[in-house]
Image 1 (tube, rainbow, N blue to C red):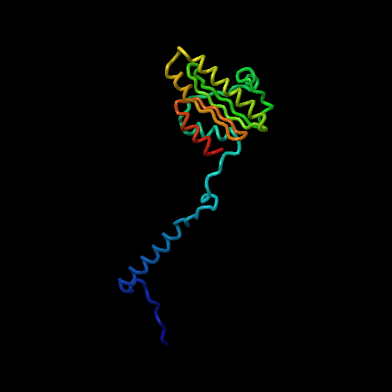
Image 2: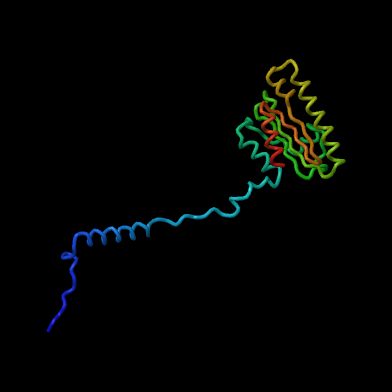
Length: 176
């Protein structure tokens, strides 16, 4: 009776053993590597613009150009700015926490053109009041007020008082 003996690894040629070892290591390592995740189709689109003025303000804060700011309570808006909040569909009123700083950000979306006209008059008045109040005080704060950015595009209005008003205004324009 002829019985074939199985080929034992110990008797296999060295080159065959090395090839089997490399192949088994390659299979083992490739099983541990994660598959690459393709970018989602959303990642290829332009970044979305903020849906509301709070989100837009957070983008401005994210630039690091603003000092610590505090919101103006809605109950004080009519007395400080002369603006009836019923004229606005969305609004953000922020002032510097440090009372010695003149930094201020006001972003408003008016309900209609007539409301935007009234709000623009009140924002001009507010800026003039800040200028008068800063005369004879800190020259840097006065210069900052003189370089403030006041803009209107349809029903969208912005008053930005900051040493970096131009850069913050650019963030506003790009995301509005």
